[in-house]
Length: 116
Image 1 (cartoon, rainbow, N blue to C red):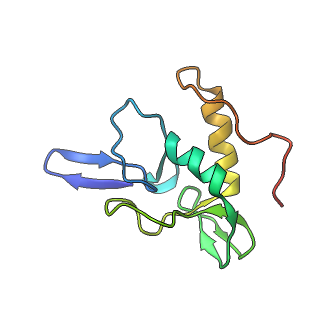
Image 2 (image 1 turned 30 degrees about the horizontal axis):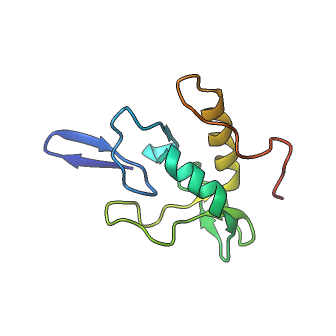
């Protein structure tokens, strides 16, 4: 998520609103969507089948009800109120952070495990 301040553009996690300070690992999706490492861990743990159709904030694809995703129940005021991430993007972020030598992240999703 991006927001304009007097100092310029601030990048923040769509799911918790945490500003990117170049210390907290974050990954960017389409159209400036951002997911921090803390929210990735929470999203993997709390992902469930969607009860209605949704558009993934990260990849901008539309999904039908029944697809696994994560949408925070409680959101800070500065988070994106519509943020939802699909299981495919969670898998990709999990894989990407695990490959990053500067990030301490162990894969949390078995690469052979499929949701669908």
